[in-house]
Length: 217
Image (cartoon, rainbow, N blue to C red; front, side, top):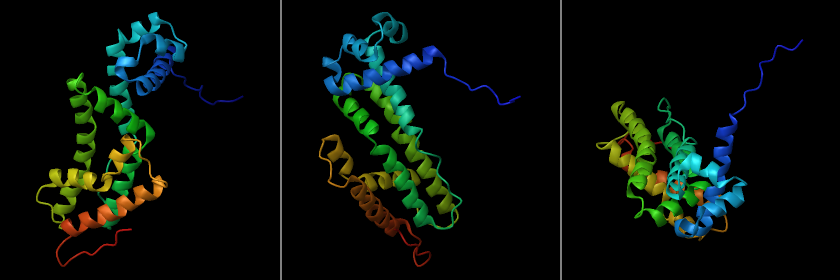
């Protein structure tokens, strides 16, 4: 007789809510906030208006929920920074790869387009997404830099500022190009090039003078 534990399933309401958010994301990305309607979401999700209103209240509530939850889901892909490494340049390159895998994903680019277009209409929402998004990632990187600086592995007088600069350098203008729909012929190659050259530049600025000379590749 099998003793395997029964498989856990998501509550039906939670699953339905997620399906509606998926449909709403597609509708808002295609039509923008002004052109999106509850009717379009209903048609795509196969849900009733009553169900959508019971979950989200109205179109503004639906938009706020999808931006909040999609931002959280995207950021879940960025793990905690590992600071116990011996090879700091290699660790910086890995941090950059993890960050770019999240920031350059189609879902993240689509969400950024929505925020860029509708930010003036929802300033508090944009501020919240930025606070739990970019600031959370930068804080994790800053803590790693602070730890390495304390161990004499790097020179970092302002880890918080340097963390933001690292993310900015490896992202470069590639993020803006993707948001604008100007996709390189080989996106993977373009991302890796940004990472290698960006981390190399960053390491020249923070690497210990006359000390550790790590290879960045």
